[in-house]
Image (cartoon, rainbow, N blue to C red; front, side, top):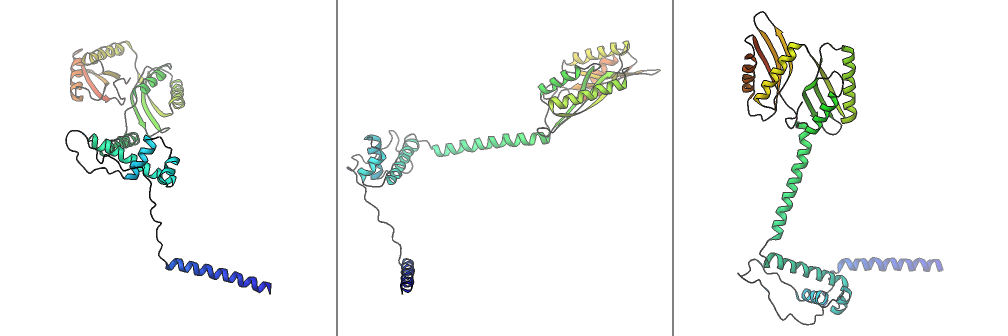
Length: 316
């Protein structure tokens, strides 16, 4: 009997819960009525506006309860808890009223009294900042892919490292490819004495490539250019270098060779020209050819113009 009574009691509770749920579904939910806010008195001054020309734009309307929250908290020094007790509303309501009032006061002072639309100007500044940051980020990403000149300090350090080894007379035609951290490749020509031992020179070049890899993380391929160091070639090299410097101090020559014939002597060399140079390649070639052929009527200059891949004219 007790089990039947207990089962019947549970059934009655379930039935009442279902009926209550159904009644909730059938009855319209009415929001809680707005609670009155207690204020001391209405503001004596109903309107503020700046001196000078009439204000433009819509007015900023401060509600009475917002005015009262500002008066109690900012003027009288009430805490939000004391303010909520005085106005007979919840503390969260006071916080919402107070925040709304301060935003309206800030808008009135900035946008109206100063006649300055800060929102629009701030939006423009933020947009400009985003565009600038985006451009810099895109440039840093795209530059290595499209190719950029080598940093002059890096080029100078490579010069010092390579020239510190024996039998390395100079380097030129340096080409650098940077595809991001750890993905840099480089090639250049190293001038070596023509009469040096080939196996010894090969060992030195291999050592330089490994040293550049360990210090700068650059995969390097070095091409050796044999240089003749006889008295005649050295004297002519000094004369051609002087002619290049007379044309412009930033010019330099390399790979000078002499091929003598029965009627004339070919003087072959490369001249290094920085980007943005004031003369064209044709003008540089013409001026140096005239200077070389003026040294002897038998000389015939064969000139190759090379361009520096370093960011400044410091290329060796």
